[in-house]
Length: 225
Length: 225
Image 1 (tube, rainbow over the protein chains, first blue to last red):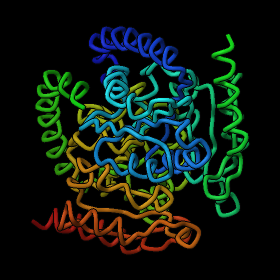
Image 2: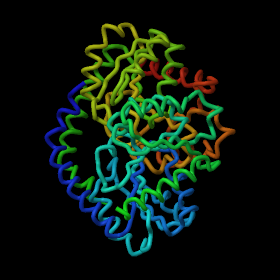
Image 3: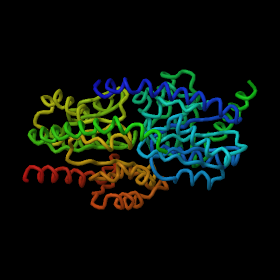
Image 4: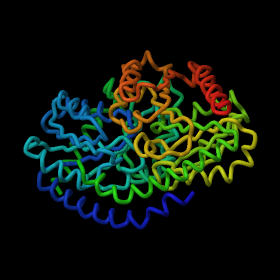
């Protein structure tokens, strides 16, 4: 089928160029603010906010969170309760965050989040549209939960060929599911050989210390360079 | 946030009008073909294809399936193995099906699917973009799996306020999760009071006879009228 995609080429090109410009400006802004920024992309219900609650428990005010959702500020409320400042972007109908939304959000949010060292941006729950929008992050991460099945990687190659980190979530359910995390990992490595993989459970804490270490070392490397 | 959505209004309006025209033509075409058509929308990994495998087991060649995915024809292969003819639309980058894609697919598929009484269209895994595209279906259904959590309805009101059927899936995992299906159901009824709800498990078969009866009775009502 070519009707949908080909019809869109003429309008997407200039939009993406503009987005890349704003993303580059965001990257400078995050550098100036001493922030290491992670863009987390996953399906609705993959467990993105539960992961952020766990990170908020660990990092408290060292972490700032920007939440993207079509509607409600439920996710920001959850993160704030867990101990980190959070800012909700309600996109209205838009199915992804773009660099300009994040820029405006950070302008409004930065006073509240002053002193934070890590910024996690939780993208709108969607494996397709967010994958092509650079937000100015240092690390693009995908969170796939085991109950979603082990066949997701090759179905969404635009995302999984661009990520720096693959998080395989809800590992606590492993024994109740047929899904195989090895398949997720190997199919992801076939698209993105250098990807860093963490198997995690926000419920049991599995893999979270390792992921937190990765974040801490990532920031150290960024600001030592 | 208004940047993304407002920028898109000028191009979306005419696209939707054209889509509605093609959807109306699809509706006539399905009527002429003796088909009762269901558009199933859900997140990646919600269990849409597993549900279709179960329906294929039940309905065999009475069922025809159109599969929408960004890439791969894995889903169509699974449904065919389960006993029903299936046609794969690979959208390339597009995050939803539109009426024209379905129309072209049915034109190519209808010889293979001759004699079928039910057509299920599995939309691209996404809770946002597919919700505003009428495909000419008789029933719009959303499948939310319990592991996705019980907070999804109010986050995606454009979808849940338009559906005829809510399927709450992977009920076999109920005892391993904190999610409450009553909350999903009551929040959905708050947006869409007349919605029909089925709690299902494609693994154990829970709720599937009732959903199949609903489909059979739906077709009978359509063609008796």
